[in-house]
Length: 249
Image (tube, rainbow, N blue to C red):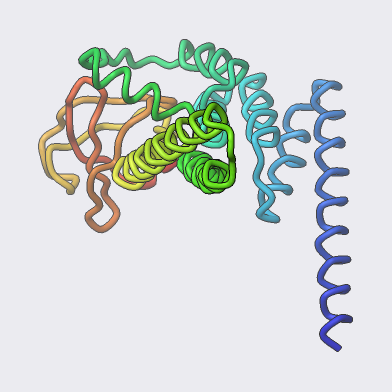
């Protein structure tokens, strides 16, 4: 009975992936025919099944950009970057989409050390850093066993140095995995979806107007009160915005 259930689950999963692949190719075909809204519907139907991927997010963003849906295009480029942080095509297209936004936000420059550390951390997602550390530890164990079993002094020296290098790399992998995980956990970003929205000094409509933002602008969400989100811009400005005017990444 258990074997039959396993086979049924396998068949269902296989069929689901097959249908998603068929839908993805149909979306690509519609995109090539410049039927961008229909392509968007096809890609969204894949996301509705929970089968997110870099390709789906990227193509979905491209389709939105083609019909000047700036906020959704930036949103889905950002979603694609979460899965492929260093993809040049995604970064280039995101840059083009951001040029279509109205707001100009001056980014506070980072120090050389913190900027370099951040750039290095973003080389991989936290799960890839974790897998890298696991692989390094496994290689460390294997090299250490070879060190103990080797007879030639030259080989023992080589295995000894290699094993400890792998251990050091593994420790660094754990460090960057936790750093990346904490960054993602503690830094919630969002894209403004409202064509124009007024940022308030407090989470209510009667409070003072601080500044305005427009669709496509990326903000950091630092707090939530009822239906209001406290946001922070890259230049340090803060304020409150209705939750319906943005979409969190």
